[in-house]
Length: 146
Image 1 (spheres, helix red, strand yellow):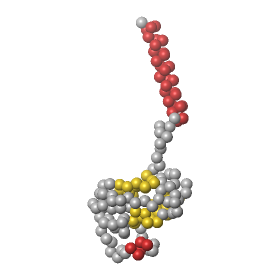
Image 2 (image 1 turned 120 degrees about the vertical axis):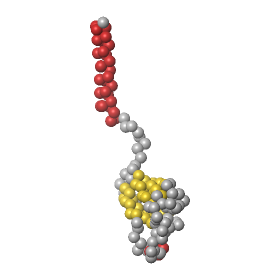
Image 3 (image 1 turned 45 degrees about the vertical axis):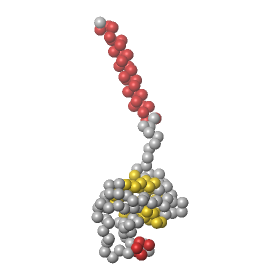
């Protein structure tokens, strides 16, 4: 009886060894997905950010004298997608008011509490954005060429 199962056992072991070896050596030749997305940079709109800061005026925003609460550097081809998440209790927007020539002038519309907005920035340069309702919620993203 052992003689009858021995060739079968050898064949099964050979098949398992072949499959395992093929997986180890050929696996890297076939990536799991060709749709690899670049990483996403997440920017939180913090709770309570709807409260008007003392002394803020829109002129500061337009004359570059306002210190942006969010400064993010995004590198093209690596993490050129930015996602804003509204962690506040009121609606906000994310609207670009400066973008490089050919760059995306993104506008999220209203982002409700717990909701998010995503923009992919593919043109190098400086993007400045603000919340249309709360202008002190502003930021700057510098996209560097890859």
